[in-house]
Length: 112
Image (tube, rainbow, N blue to C red; front, side, top):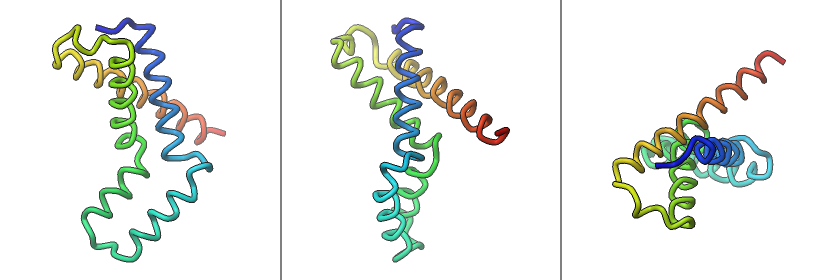
């Protein structure tokens, strides 16, 4: 089980990774290419899923949180120290905390 401090750091990393993939201008060219690819065949279910994934902070955040948690567990050698169910709950916790950070960030933009 991860500590609250580690959870906070992983949530911050998940939040930042999600912001990078969904909003940051450094990846605008990639997102534009994917949008152009989608526009050539917008009725494609796969293309629709890809565009939804890269434009939704909750969709992207879920997978980014999983990647951040898995990387941390593997690098620290703690993946085998708890049952898979516990890691699933940790994934939910990291993704949930990162989503709260995204909600807080979005609410600040609306009020400004």
